[in-house]
Image (cartoon, rainbow, N blue to C red; front, side, top):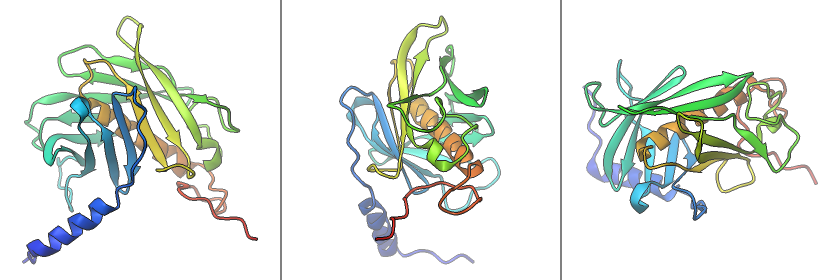
Length: 235
């Protein structure tokens, strides 16, 4: 029989996890902002001035269980199922819960595009994520990156409605020299629920994982893997 964890220990663990959250500045114009922390995302800006956390749904994941839950103001407001090239969002952890929508991933010559599809409405689609501010890597966030250093940079894409009109944008910043190794933000139309914005960040985070896992980590030889902190040069 599994041993019950004492309430005081749960409180200590929760306090310890909370203390690990790092403040990340948020651009005043964005409607959504998040950054990677541990196994999930800290949501720095959600709708109506809220913040929250996208965290693993539980210690153990059973068949059909969601991978993540979205928590805002201490309340679970959604559950996410990342599966292959799709992240499904429902209002609770039940497979029978109302569908909020889904985010699909596709690739244009190795460069990722996202489709944000609210339940009962048309899909909004992104262009490829284009590099901003220069850098030595490819011009887009792409699976063609050869090393983890190639992945570093700021990438931004335009979000378009079904008619192709620009209605917002999404951005990710990837670097070991910022407040968090991965930062996500954007300006999204009202038709995109906050839960779907979190799913878009999740899909993008999964894609960055894939790219870094298949790129050469120049700090560890030929094996792939994420580069969260650079190794200081010897003096």
